[in-house]
Image (cartoon, rainbow, N blue to C red; front, top):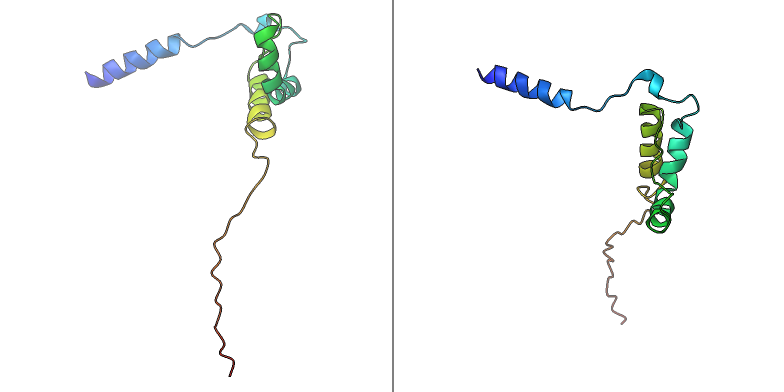
Length: 102
């Protein structure tokens, strides 16, 4: 009985997944490279989108997975998620021997 409930829940959640028909994507829809660019300029586009209503931070329609992958890479790897600098701090123990001058 427990397996049936889990299976029914999984099917119910799968039915909620957003899908689109293959012919719904325009041939000139933004792809990987534009997704990469949009991800990279996300911080600027977000600020501008607060002021200008016609500016969006995500292109709709796009070609799906490749656009999303480029967008993800643009944000995380090249954009705001990138670690710009690397600082290494190290504690040093300095051994100083007191020399007695005779």
